[in-house]
Image (cartoon, rainbow, N blue to C red; front, side, top):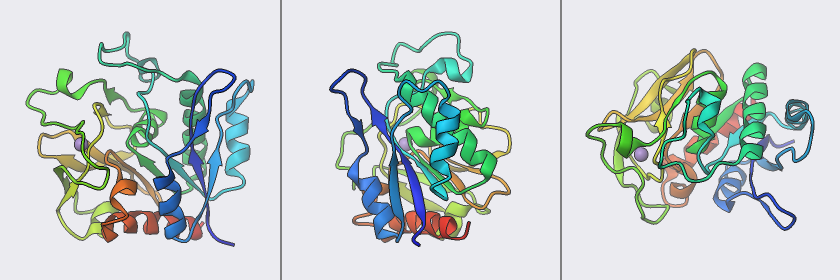
Length: 241
Ligand code: MN
């Protein structure tokens, strides 16, 4: 059997709303030899945590995908920053349940953009609600460019899974975010930072594979073999569970 990876999805409320996942995530898992299973949020379920655990019993890995901002109440903020536009409580609740359950099981997790932030919040960390408004001297991180085009550098920590995959200290990444990890959850380490100090990746210490990246490797993967190899390593870790 190929390694099955649960893929979290976005959703809209309302009768004709849709459950959706960008195809690049699914393609990257297939190209790495895995089988993606798209996880619909637990609409109207009294116990989303039970649904999350049940879905994870069919998979050996979890991919947390990109999307809108997480409700700042979930990481202890007293008010939403003016730059927070859209909040999706159904998606928030279900992805938190998936992340908590996967962390408990210590199965491989790859969090991408919002997914890295979900991972950090689920593990007890917080977020910077708006980089331009909250980080002095930050460079641009929400940049209109093709998904496959890298726009800024990040520096990788030497003793990290990412360094093992990329085998270099500095890589170029794309950037489509206005929030970032901070403070980092207990048991996690920062393993990539941008030139302005913004956190670009976190990893859980002493886990087989728990990695969150702020950039979008699934967008780079078509043209950059090393970005695809991040998915290869994730799927390999899933195979090993
Ligand atoms: Mn960035």
